Image (cartoon, rainbow, N blue to C red; front, side, top):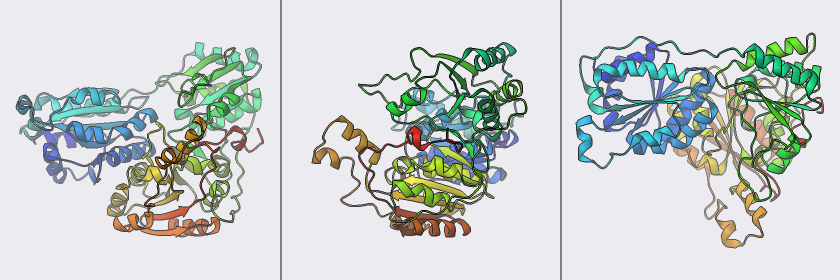
Length: 535
């Protein structure tokens, strides 16, 4: 084997079966090696940001690392936004970055760049292979690092001469670390907090705690202790619908988020990060924890938070049923011209069973948590790191990871234009992704932020308006080989969505929606995210 062949064989033997790529000359030997390693599926994208986002979506659903192949420093830079989202999501991923041959670097050729500091912003593990004999071993180490308990991006930089060198052998898989159990002292401390010490405890869930087991355990704890339960603002993957306990997410606006946390004397972090505002604002503190509130950490990122929650529930809530379980009846369709008020209901009424929902609806998605809590079972993926342009690529990767499940993407118009090239990959691969593009002709969330600064003038408003010309997503979809229709009413959206998810291959629905009022925000307020028992 040459180095590239040995690397791909090592990836497959280590459990990595897909590589998203937009390769260049320095990676051409990897492309050539695909014929020799048919077990590794190569997926071509038209932009590195699509490749990195698709690898993120694939890994979130498959629960094992995907790989992505990037072209030197500029290609890595093009993919950085969605690597950032993957890093925030705790996604296991192997990023392979091709670079110049070791002896060519001294010439400072046009594509020469310092890759390590760029990759370092999103990598939990990083290595540059300096000799062909080390390549396969480094690849096995990268996969093991990515598969670790917290999930992280492992970046392996491979010089071209290392890839083309002959006489290289593949390496056996390396065992990845598994999540460590939470120590008994930590369990005892939180047990005491919830049972004896706290008058108004709050349990904040995140990460692995948002699967069905974690949510059910949290529902039992709420039933027994009366603790308030909140979910992190942007979950990487969360189970919902079909009688799974549903809890409010931390609100996006700082005032609303502060209101959710005010009055609680103890906060228990169960897989969630310390709660802070998404941005800094002159009139709001960045730390959302009230001044007189104490914080307990149930589990660190490398610990088994699900087992810890179930142990707490067995101790504090024996015999209790989960509180906050969703209604099992499908939501009734909504009607009228599409707007923020009826968009979520129109989608929920047509949501297929066991769908994967990718939510980058932004301002139009304010009603989704409440509507989906009453719908069929689904997994929800959101924009974890806040870098827009994630939806289309993540949906692409998710569909490849679960070809037997329907994928429904709710995509804002401005965000869609960051990675619209993903539609071409969906058509090329024949993926069952139904994309609903919400066309309100603006960066609506930024318009709301602009209005909060003061009375904006015409020139300021034009910087956030997607007009002159307006965007034609039906035409853009047709140009990439994706069927598309337009809708303007809630009834039309429900009908079109039902039809689209029943047909094979990618579909796009361009949903024209009334502009969001200036006071609207990109996340629901506490009152619009109630649990189904009214809490």
